[in-house]
Length: 455
Image 1 (cartoon, rainbow, N blue to C red):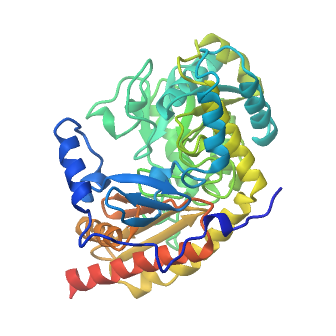
Image 2 (image 1 turned 30 degrees about the horizontal axis):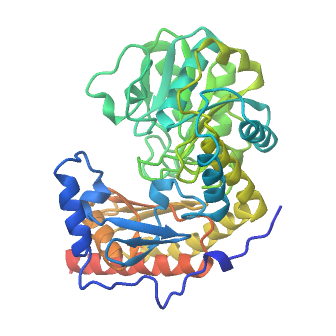
């Protein structure tokens, strides 16, 4: 295991952030955005709020089309976990781009090396893998595997969890906000614990995990046909606002599923590959899921994802027509293998945990210092700030969220909004000094927004 060296990722903080245009987005960004907007629709919220056009990135820095430079607190929405254009990953992709780009699901040496590395790195008996090109495809394969392994057809998922946008053979969209007002038979949604906004509490006001489990049990008996193949959920919600469960939830949920012969399916597309300081987020609670999906940081920007299955259920994968056109292509395998190697060689899990303590210390007094900050949360390099109009009522403050996001971006911080919740996912290679500079920018934006909105 290597030791983290900040030198390759250090920024000259007298030069970054840097602006060479009088306003941002600058004229070149505006021109490119206007040209694209004629044809490209359905832009995300972060682009609509700050329509900048990016040109390049290196490590923890991004540069727009006008030459303005930003500290990256978004990682391309949780993707470039190891920073932009890491040389080892770039070299691996380039090698196979010049050698062999695709051979369907035939074996290649680079694929074998990746499979062996995953088997040696992932916890427990997660030893069966399939590779895909997007998170949705990996989750879909996981759902089909759960059905094949159990002979059951129903699924539980959680409100506000995110499992993909498209609907293929089963339909990840049926388990997310994209499914519309009705949900097809066999797909059910239940609440998940949120320590800031709990549904059930103990007498002291703290979240009561047991009440959630009791609700799940009653729901299964009264609202399903009791043919639940798997409980599917994110360890930490991403799109939902970096919602983190209490530490006792996943161990108790693992036991709950075991007692009812329900598989536990952890969608770690967002939380895997060191994002939270572990290869899998579930490792924080010593929980081994039966099926896991990895993505985003799995290829550090190259489109590659993975479904991992425990040995007892490996035979089920043979029953689901698991292969894909692009999954496991040599370039993808080279990118993913390089990511595992970089994390190990550079001691990045330990550094992500160090950054977690830095972020927590930096935000520890914000809920008392600022009227609009209702909650702050952090696990590794996955952070969230919840803005509210009234702390007692916890009323979401969407206007403040937009303003803080835009102000920080104009100060040189690229990051991710979610209404009244601000999300941060800095690369886990980020030096401490750069991380602190990013937090300074965020705090400045919060203070200015509070003054403008509340006086």
